[in-house]
Each structure stands twice: as C-alpha cells, then as structure tokens.
Image 1 (cartoon, rainbow, N blue to C red):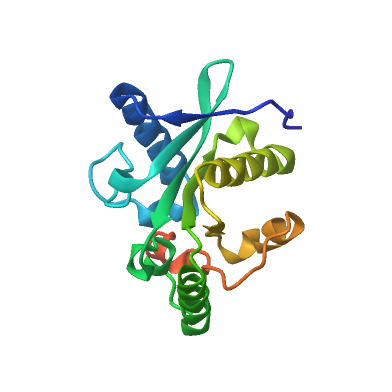
Image 2 (cartoon, one colour):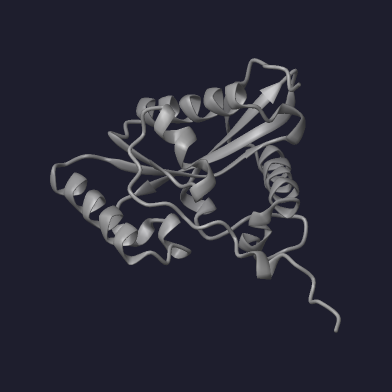
Length: 182
C-alpha cells in the first residue's frame, strides 16, 4: 500500500533545480506509456513550452517526488494539450472555451507534464498534487485552468470537480509493442 505523504509544492527557478526537474520528468515519462511524447535530448524532458512555464516541484523530505508546470495561455495556439489531441469535437470545445474566457477578460493557464514518483503514486497523493497546482495557478492570477489527461484519468478529475471537455486517447498499443516475429 502506498503511503500518503505531505507534498510540499515549491516553484522551481534555480537552473540546477530545473535540470533535476527535467531529468525527473524524463524518468517518469520514459517508464510510462506516455514515453512517445518525449522529444529531444536523452535523459531530459524539455520542450518549447518550458521557457514560458512556471515549474513546480513536489518534495517529501527535500526529495523531488512530483512535478507539474503551468503554462500561460494568452492565445489558443499556446495550448500544449492540442498538439496531440486528434478528436475534433474535443479540440473545438477547448478552443471555444479558451476563446470565450479570453473574450470575458479571464486569464487562462494550462497544467501539463504532471508526474508523481511511483513509490508515492496513490489517489490521495495525486489529488493533493493536482489541487495544490490549481491553487498555485489561482494565486498566480489565473482565473481558469486546463488540466490535460488521457481517457483513463478522466474519472479522477471529475471526482475533483473538473468538467471534462475531451480527453486524450491513451497511447496506441501498437507503438508500445515490439514487432511480432513470424
């Protein structure tokens, strides 16, 4: 049974801590079905959205055990989650929502690259992390937040009070299997 821990969420701005953060993110993604999203340098998960994102580390006893980033969404084109979303209905729902919120003068942010170390993965720790990130975005002045998830995670977010607009499909199994030998 995974133990519930107290996550201390801290902003990460120090270049050495950011390097640790990118390596941690890589280690989590490289061992998951989401490894297909890794691009670039081996051992580092960094993309074009990181330069303008606020990065957060979740620590237990000064050890990085969780992370997330909050990306400001000033234009619809800034949305990371649309890069891999193929469902046109979901894409349009998100684009319409963000456009509507911007028209109302709301500041919008997107949470992405949420990672939790395997030894700390539990519903209660995931809930604590997501709610802490949402609170950080709110304190940073964002009125609306988008959290990307795949289909298997949607029920979790609904239980936390989120509205599901559309979800990413899980990574296709054909991309994760070794080719069969005939």
